[in-house]
Image (cartoon, rainbow, N blue to C red; front, side, top):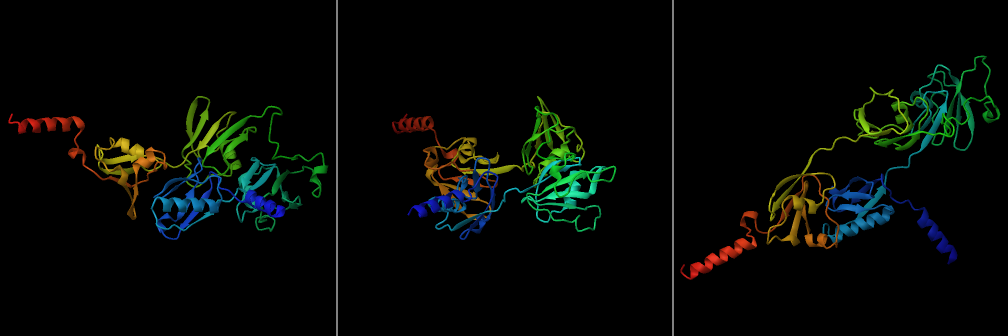
Length: 389
């Protein structure tokens, strides 16, 4: 029994859990409109069509699938929901590089990546000895390769996750500056630990911050004469959708816009914050119809909730059937029906709206609805008319 409990506990602890930034592939057997890839927001949510925001952070794929399935069925969006989820965003695997090159650091590994690919992004100098490039694998094995000929097998050497590549400096006397079989034993090795110790002023490490659509956002040590391009290479480059013409630099209280490639050589300073901006989002609109004071078409932002749009529309008129609000989505003829009171009482989360949806509130139209004063006045007039006045 003890062995079983330990094994079960270990299995639970090692199960992969969902975190912000992950991408989940959702498949629903009964409703193909739900089938697509969903990115987990910084708050740990995914925005599921017809359902709105669902918290999945910290759950396993199986637990998240069960949660979505249950919500779809409980809210009567689907009579039966067979959901499967697959985590498709792999962990970033890195390759370190440094030595006699303009750029030193690490970059995400990609399938099929070769030594020549790494040489291009590291920007070798005139003093780089391309006939002797050190490649150290993750298991500690070291080899020295000749990358001087474009067609050579060494030049096209496939790199693997965890590899460390060191570019050596040319020896003016054509003598090896290091023992290829054991470089760490030679005190004259000019590139000892070039990647992990890029600090130019010992005891005083300055940093810059990189944010936005890059592979590895975060804080980076500022090496001498670091440029914008070097910082971006260290961060593994851009992600899909990055606006290369809109990179924001914050320096103290001032801001300015940079662009690639025009500002490749822009020199960075301690404390700089560089943000690679996302593409401008197209405007989103929803339509509110029925028993509200100001029905019409409203512009919304990503994340706008149903209660916010109802306020934009002036609130419900008296007699509105708030227990039968219908939300119609494009490309889906079956509306979603909700009780607004459940949101107000906290029985369910507010509904996050998306582009093109129509919110229909049954009940009297605004011009047909009478407030309490109007009703009282109308009643008094009718009473006087009956008395013959």
